[in-house]
Length: 323
Image 1 (cartoon, helix red, strand yellow):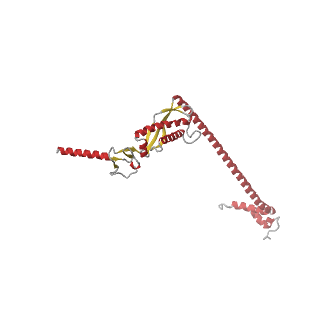
Image 2 (tube, helix red, strand yellow):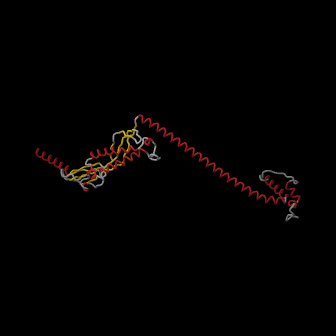
Image 3 (tube, one colour):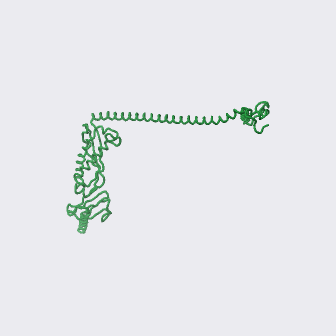
C-alpha cells in the first residue's frame, strides 16, 4: 500500500513537471515571445490583450526546454528615473536636475531581438536618458525662471520645452541603436530642479524682477484700457449730443414753420385769436366739473358773443354765415 501511494505521488509530480514544461501563461498585461533553439519569428509572439486565449484561458502549449523557451514582457507603461545630476546651462549657470521617462514595450519581437531581457533594456534606457539629458544645457538659466513660453514666446513653459527636447533626443538615440527597438518612449519629465544657494538667491531676485515687470506691464495695459474706454465713452457722448442737438433744431424749425402759418392767419384777425384764447382758458377752468363758476356776462367770451361775431373777423372782411 505504501509503495502504491509513493508511486501515485511520484506520478503526479512527474505529470506536474511535464505540464509545467509544456505550458506557459500570458496575462492580459503581458506579451510573450516563444523561442525555438533561441530564435523566434512573428508567429511566435503572443500578446495577452490581443489573443482569444490558449488551450485553457490564458494557458498556452509549447515544446519543453531546451527546444523552446518563453520570454515574457510587461506591456504596461513603466517609469525609469535618473539620479539628480549637475548640469551647466547655456549661460554657464549650474543647476541640479532629476529626470524620468515613461516607456513601454510596443513590439515584443523587436524588443527581444534588441535587448533580450528587461534588465538589459532598463540599463540601456538609463544610459540613453543620461545622454539625452544634455539637451537641457541648450537652455539659459533665465528660461527656467520665466512663467511661460519658449525664449521670446508667451505661451508654454521652458521646462516643457526642455522635456520635449530631451524626449526627441532620447527617441533619436534609440533609433540609432535599431530602427525598431521594440519600445516606445511616452514622455520625459523633469522630476526635480534645484539650485545651489548662490544660484538660488540670484533666482529669487530674478523672479522678483520678472514679477515686478509683469505687474508693471499689467498696470500699463490697465491704464491704456481705461483711457481707451473713457475716450470711447466721451466720443459716444459727443455723437449722441450732436444728434440730439440736431434733432432739437429740426423739431424747433418745423414747429416754427407750422406756427408761422397760424401767426399769419391770426395777424389778419386779432379778434378771432383773442376769442379762441378765451375759449381755451374757459375750457381749462371748467375741465374739473366739480366746481360752480360765476362769470360776468360783460366779460370774457360772453362779451364777444354779445358784440357779435362780425367783430372777430375785423380786419379780414366779413365772415361767412354772419349778418
